[in-house]
Length: 276
Ligand SMILES: NC(=O)c1ccc[n+]([C@@H]2O[C@H](COP(=O)([O-])OP(=O)(O)OC[C@H]3O[C@@H](n4cnc5c(N)ncnc54)[C@H](OP(=O)(O)O)[C@@H]3O)[C@@H](O)[C@H]2O)c1
Image: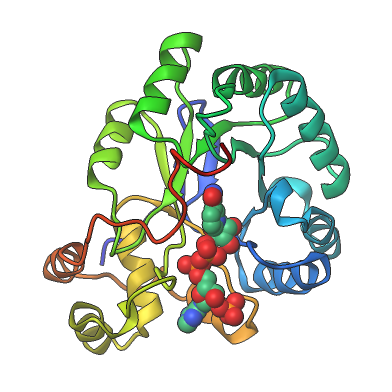
Protein backbone atom coordinates (compact mmCIF):
# COMPACT_ATOMS: atom_id res chain seq x y z
CA UNK A 1 0.00 0.00 0.00
CA UNK A 2 1.25 3.50 -0.84
CA UNK A 3 0.89 5.50 2.33
CA UNK A 4 -0.07 9.13 1.81
CA UNK A 5 2.33 11.62 3.31
CA UNK A 6 0.73 13.16 6.36
CA UNK A 7 1.61 16.70 5.27
CA UNK A 8 2.02 18.69 2.09
CA UNK A 9 4.27 21.68 1.55
CA UNK A 10 2.60 24.96 0.61
CA UNK A 11 4.22 27.32 -1.90
CA UNK A 12 5.76 29.34 0.97
CA UNK A 13 7.47 26.21 2.30
CA UNK A 14 5.12 25.82 5.28
CA UNK A 15 3.94 22.26 5.89
CA UNK A 16 0.20 21.71 6.36
CA UNK A 17 -1.24 18.41 7.66
CA UNK A 18 -3.17 16.60 4.94
CA UNK A 19 -5.98 15.87 7.33
CA UNK A 20 -7.70 18.05 9.90
CA UNK A 21 -10.77 18.83 11.91
CA UNK A 22 -13.51 21.34 11.00
CA UNK A 23 -15.60 23.29 13.51
CA UNK A 24 -18.49 24.87 11.57
CA UNK A 25 -21.79 25.06 13.50
CA UNK A 26 -20.22 24.38 16.93
CA UNK A 27 -20.39 27.02 19.68
CA UNK A 28 -17.55 27.87 22.07
CA UNK A 29 -18.43 25.23 24.68
CA UNK A 30 -19.09 22.56 22.09
CA UNK A 31 -15.91 23.44 20.24
CA UNK A 32 -13.78 23.11 23.34
CA UNK A 33 -15.07 19.58 24.01
CA UNK A 34 -14.97 18.46 20.36
CA UNK A 35 -11.53 19.89 19.60
CA UNK A 36 -10.14 18.31 22.78
CA UNK A 37 -11.47 14.96 21.52
CA UNK A 38 -10.05 15.58 18.04
CA UNK A 39 -6.59 16.49 19.35
CA UNK A 40 -6.57 13.48 21.69
CA UNK A 41 -7.53 11.30 18.69
CA UNK A 42 -4.59 12.54 16.64
CA UNK A 43 -5.83 15.41 14.48
CA UNK A 44 -3.26 18.21 14.33
CA UNK A 45 -5.05 20.76 12.09
CA UNK A 46 -8.05 22.70 13.41
CA UNK A 47 -10.15 24.87 11.11
CA UNK A 48 -12.20 27.73 12.54
CA UNK A 49 -13.39 31.18 11.40
CA UNK A 50 -14.44 34.48 12.90
CA UNK A 51 -17.93 33.71 11.65
CA UNK A 52 -18.16 30.41 13.53
CA UNK A 53 -18.10 32.24 16.88
CA UNK A 54 -16.00 29.51 18.49
CA UNK A 55 -12.40 30.75 18.42
CA UNK A 56 -12.36 31.09 22.21
CA UNK A 57 -13.42 27.46 22.61
CA UNK A 58 -10.88 26.28 20.03
CA UNK A 59 -8.13 28.20 21.82
CA UNK A 60 -9.10 26.69 25.17
CA UNK A 61 -8.99 23.19 23.71
CA UNK A 62 -5.50 23.73 22.28
CA UNK A 63 -4.32 25.07 25.65
CA UNK A 64 -5.89 22.13 27.50
CA UNK A 65 -4.45 19.53 25.11
CA UNK A 66 -0.96 19.63 26.55
CA UNK A 67 0.39 19.92 23.01
CA UNK A 68 2.98 22.57 22.20
CA UNK A 69 1.64 25.41 20.07
CA UNK A 70 3.81 24.33 17.13
CA UNK A 71 2.30 20.84 17.18
CA UNK A 72 -1.13 22.20 16.19
CA UNK A 73 -1.83 23.83 12.82
CA UNK A 74 -4.41 26.55 13.43
CA UNK A 75 -6.48 28.00 10.60
CA UNK A 76 -8.95 30.86 10.85
CA UNK A 77 -10.84 32.92 8.29
CA UNK A 78 -11.96 36.51 8.01
CA UNK A 79 -15.39 37.53 6.76
CA UNK A 80 -14.95 41.33 6.64
CA UNK A 81 -13.14 42.93 3.73
CA UNK A 82 -10.91 46.02 3.46
CA UNK A 83 -7.22 46.32 4.32
CA UNK A 84 -7.61 47.77 7.84
CA UNK A 85 -10.63 45.63 8.68
CA UNK A 86 -8.75 42.46 7.84
CA UNK A 87 -5.75 43.50 9.96
CA UNK A 88 -8.05 44.35 12.91
CA UNK A 89 -9.95 41.06 12.56
CA UNK A 90 -6.68 39.15 12.59
CA UNK A 91 -5.60 40.76 15.87
CA UNK A 92 -9.00 39.95 17.39
CA UNK A 93 -8.78 36.32 16.23
CA UNK A 94 -5.31 35.97 17.73
CA UNK A 95 -6.62 37.29 21.06
CA UNK A 96 -9.63 34.97 21.07
CA UNK A 97 -7.49 31.97 20.15
CA UNK A 98 -4.86 32.89 22.75
CA UNK A 99 -1.94 32.77 20.34
CA UNK A 100 0.53 35.16 18.73
CA UNK A 101 0.27 33.70 15.23
CA UNK A 102 -1.94 31.63 12.96
CA UNK A 103 -0.57 28.86 10.77
CA UNK A 104 -3.00 29.73 7.98
CA UNK A 105 -5.39 32.65 7.53
CA UNK A 106 -8.00 32.75 4.79
CA UNK A 107 -10.32 35.29 3.21
CA UNK A 108 -13.56 33.40 3.94
CA UNK A 109 -15.51 34.41 0.80
CA UNK A 110 -14.52 36.64 -2.14
CA UNK A 111 -17.71 38.77 -1.85
CA UNK A 112 -17.23 40.20 -5.36
CA UNK A 113 -20.12 42.63 -4.92
CA UNK A 114 -18.13 44.35 -2.13
CA UNK A 115 -15.13 44.27 -4.48
CA UNK A 116 -12.39 44.68 -1.88
CA UNK A 117 -10.86 41.22 -2.02
CA UNK A 118 -7.62 42.41 -3.67
CA UNK A 119 -6.80 44.87 -0.86
CA UNK A 120 -7.90 42.25 1.68
CA UNK A 121 -5.49 39.79 0.08
CA UNK A 122 -2.72 42.40 0.31
CA UNK A 123 -3.44 42.65 4.05
CA UNK A 124 -2.84 38.89 4.36
CA UNK A 125 0.42 39.15 2.41
CA UNK A 126 1.59 41.91 4.77
CA UNK A 127 0.50 39.95 7.85
CA UNK A 128 2.54 37.01 6.55
CA UNK A 129 5.58 39.26 6.09
CA UNK A 130 5.10 40.53 9.67
CA UNK A 131 5.02 36.96 11.03
CA UNK A 132 1.44 37.15 12.30
CA UNK A 133 0.44 34.30 9.99
CA UNK A 134 2.72 31.59 8.62
CA UNK A 135 0.74 31.06 5.42
CA UNK A 136 -1.93 32.95 3.52
CA UNK A 137 -4.85 31.66 1.51
CA UNK A 138 -8.42 32.16 0.43
CA UNK A 139 -11.70 30.28 0.50
CA UNK A 140 -14.49 29.94 -2.02
CA UNK A 141 -12.48 31.75 -4.70
CA UNK A 142 -13.23 30.94 -8.34
CA UNK A 143 -10.60 30.94 -11.09
CA UNK A 144 -11.51 34.55 -11.89
CA UNK A 145 -10.90 35.71 -8.29
CA UNK A 146 -7.65 33.73 -8.03
CA UNK A 147 -6.34 35.13 -11.31
CA UNK A 148 -7.17 38.69 -10.29
CA UNK A 149 -5.40 38.65 -6.92
CA UNK A 150 -2.32 37.07 -8.49
CA UNK A 151 -2.30 39.59 -11.36
CA UNK A 152 -2.75 42.62 -9.08
CA UNK A 153 -0.45 41.65 -6.18
CA UNK A 154 2.03 39.30 -7.87
CA UNK A 155 1.31 36.56 -5.32
CA UNK A 156 -1.06 33.64 -5.69
CA UNK A 157 -2.83 32.33 -2.58
CA UNK A 158 -1.10 29.31 -1.07
CA UNK A 159 -4.36 27.43 -0.63
CA UNK A 160 -8.03 27.70 -1.60
CA UNK A 161 -10.58 26.07 0.72
CA UNK A 162 -13.66 25.16 -1.32
CA UNK A 163 -16.72 22.93 -1.27
CA UNK A 164 -15.45 19.60 -2.52
CA UNK A 165 -16.99 16.10 -2.27
CA UNK A 166 -17.94 13.37 -4.76
CA UNK A 167 -21.11 15.19 -5.85
CA UNK A 168 -19.13 18.39 -6.50
CA UNK A 169 -15.51 17.55 -7.16
CA UNK A 170 -14.41 20.77 -8.89
CA UNK A 171 -12.20 19.22 -11.63
CA UNK A 172 -11.54 22.48 -13.51
CA UNK A 173 -10.67 24.47 -10.39
CA UNK A 174 -8.26 21.74 -9.26
CA UNK A 175 -6.43 21.91 -12.60
CA UNK A 176 -6.01 25.69 -12.15
CA UNK A 177 -4.79 25.14 -8.59
CA UNK A 178 -2.17 22.64 -9.80
CA UNK A 179 -0.93 25.04 -12.47
CA UNK A 180 -0.54 27.87 -9.91
CA UNK A 181 0.86 25.87 -6.94
CA UNK A 182 -2.32 26.47 -4.94
CA UNK A 183 -3.22 23.67 -2.49
CA UNK A 184 -6.84 22.51 -2.49
CA UNK A 185 -8.63 22.12 0.84
CA UNK A 186 -12.08 20.49 0.86
CA UNK A 187 -14.92 21.78 2.97
CA UNK A 188 -18.14 19.79 3.34
CA UNK A 189 -16.08 16.74 2.37
CA UNK A 190 -18.84 14.29 3.34
CA UNK A 191 -21.36 15.85 0.99
CA UNK A 192 -24.19 15.38 3.46
CA UNK A 193 -26.09 18.53 2.65
CA UNK A 194 -28.05 16.99 -0.16
CA UNK A 195 -28.55 13.65 -1.85
CA UNK A 196 -27.70 10.26 -0.46
CA UNK A 197 -23.99 10.00 -0.96
CA UNK A 198 -23.56 7.35 1.74
CA UNK A 199 -25.92 5.03 -0.17
CA UNK A 200 -24.39 5.44 -3.62
CA UNK A 201 -23.38 2.00 -4.97
CA UNK A 202 -19.89 3.30 -5.84
CA UNK A 203 -19.43 4.20 -2.17
CA UNK A 204 -21.09 1.17 -0.56
CA UNK A 205 -19.21 -1.26 -2.85
CA UNK A 206 -15.86 0.28 -1.90
CA UNK A 207 -16.84 0.30 1.78
CA UNK A 208 -17.66 -3.40 1.64
CA UNK A 209 -14.51 -4.26 -0.31
CA UNK A 210 -12.23 -2.49 2.18
CA UNK A 211 -14.16 -3.22 5.39
CA UNK A 212 -14.72 0.50 6.03
CA UNK A 213 -17.68 2.81 6.53
CA UNK A 214 -19.13 4.97 3.77
CA UNK A 215 -17.82 8.09 5.53
CA UNK A 216 -14.31 6.65 5.61
CA UNK A 217 -14.45 5.80 1.89
CA UNK A 218 -15.61 9.31 0.97
CA UNK A 219 -12.93 10.97 3.10
CA UNK A 220 -10.26 8.65 1.72
CA UNK A 221 -11.36 9.43 -1.87
CA UNK A 222 -10.93 13.12 -1.07
CA UNK A 223 -7.43 12.52 0.33
CA UNK A 224 -6.34 10.35 -2.60
CA UNK A 225 -7.52 13.08 -4.97
CA UNK A 226 -4.76 15.21 -3.45
CA UNK A 227 -6.78 17.50 -1.20
CA UNK A 228 -6.39 18.66 2.39
CA UNK A 229 -9.55 17.38 4.12
CA UNK A 230 -11.27 18.78 7.25
CA UNK A 231 -14.35 16.76 8.28
CA UNK A 232 -16.43 18.03 11.19
CA UNK A 233 -18.30 16.04 13.80
CA UNK A 234 -19.34 16.76 17.36
CA UNK A 235 -19.85 13.04 17.96
CA UNK A 236 -16.80 11.43 19.63
CA UNK A 237 -17.27 8.08 17.86
CA UNK A 238 -17.48 9.82 14.47
CA UNK A 239 -14.46 12.00 15.25
CA UNK A 240 -12.54 8.77 15.78
CA UNK A 241 -14.16 6.98 12.79
CA UNK A 242 -13.21 9.84 10.50
CA UNK A 243 -9.60 9.70 11.71
CA UNK A 244 -9.23 6.04 10.61
CA UNK A 245 -8.64 6.80 6.94
CA UNK A 246 -4.87 6.84 6.71
CA UNK A 247 -4.30 3.07 6.75
CA UNK A 248 -6.14 1.79 3.69
CA UNK A 249 -6.11 2.61 0.01
CA UNK A 250 -8.88 2.84 -2.57
CA UNK A 251 -8.13 1.23 -5.94
CA UNK A 252 -8.09 3.15 -9.20
CA UNK A 253 -11.44 1.53 -10.06
CA UNK A 254 -12.90 2.70 -6.71
CA UNK A 255 -11.66 6.24 -7.35
CA UNK A 256 -12.99 6.33 -10.90
CA UNK A 257 -16.43 5.07 -9.84
CA UNK A 258 -16.65 7.74 -7.13
CA UNK A 259 -15.41 10.42 -9.56
CA UNK A 260 -18.39 9.56 -11.79
CA UNK A 261 -20.78 10.79 -9.05
CA UNK A 262 -19.92 14.43 -9.82
CA UNK A 263 -23.06 16.41 -10.65
CA UNK A 264 -21.34 19.76 -11.13
CA UNK A 265 -23.87 21.27 -8.71
CA UNK A 266 -22.99 23.00 -5.47
CA UNK A 267 -24.75 22.07 -2.23
CA UNK A 268 -23.44 25.13 -0.39
CA UNK A 269 -23.27 28.83 -1.14
CA UNK A 270 -22.34 30.33 -4.50
CA UNK A 271 -19.10 32.40 -4.31
CA UNK A 272 -20.59 34.94 -6.69
CA UNK A 273 -23.52 35.60 -4.36
CA UNK A 274 -22.54 35.01 -0.72
CA UNK A 275 -21.96 38.19 1.27
CA UNK A 276 -22.56 40.72 -1.47
N1 LIG B 1 -14.82 27.94 3.91
C1 LIG B 1 -16.11 27.74 3.98
O1 LIG B 1 -16.91 28.52 3.45
C2 LIG B 1 -16.63 26.56 4.71
C3 LIG B 1 -17.97 26.17 4.58
C4 LIG B 1 -18.40 25.05 5.28
C5 LIG B 1 -17.50 24.34 6.05
N2 LIG B 1 -16.19 24.74 6.18
C6 LIG B 1 -15.21 24.02 7.03
O2 LIG B 1 -15.18 22.66 6.60
C7 LIG B 1 -15.52 21.82 7.70
C8 LIG B 1 -16.25 20.59 7.20
O3 LIG B 1 -17.43 20.95 6.50
P1 LIG B 1 -18.89 20.75 7.09
O4 LIG B 1 -18.82 20.79 8.57
O5 LIG B 1 -19.77 21.71 6.41
O6 LIG B 1 -19.32 19.32 6.53
P2 LIG B 1 -18.81 17.81 6.72
O7 LIG B 1 -17.61 17.73 7.58
O8 LIG B 1 -18.73 17.21 5.36
O9 LIG B 1 -20.06 17.14 7.43
C9 LIG B 1 -20.41 17.42 8.76
C10 LIG B 1 -21.71 16.70 9.04
O10 LIG B 1 -21.53 15.29 8.85
C11 LIG B 1 -21.82 14.59 10.04
N3 LIG B 1 -20.81 13.52 10.16
C12 LIG B 1 -19.49 13.69 10.42
N4 LIG B 1 -18.85 12.49 10.40
C13 LIG B 1 -19.80 11.56 10.13
C14 LIG B 1 -19.75 10.15 9.99
N5 LIG B 1 -18.60 9.47 10.14
N6 LIG B 1 -20.92 9.49 9.69
C15 LIG B 1 -22.07 10.17 9.53
N7 LIG B 1 -22.17 11.51 9.65
C16 LIG B 1 -21.03 12.20 9.95
C17 LIG B 1 -21.74 15.60 11.16
O11 LIG B 1 -22.62 15.27 12.21
P3 LIG B 1 -22.27 15.39 13.79
O12 LIG B 1 -21.43 16.62 13.98
O13 LIG B 1 -23.64 15.51 14.42
O14 LIG B 1 -21.55 14.13 14.19
C18 LIG B 1 -22.20 16.88 10.46
O15 LIG B 1 -23.61 16.92 10.41
C19 LIG B 1 -16.37 22.74 8.58
O16 LIG B 1 -16.57 22.24 9.86
C20 LIG B 1 -15.59 24.02 8.50
O17 LIG B 1 -14.45 23.96 9.33
C21 LIG B 1 -15.76 25.84 5.50
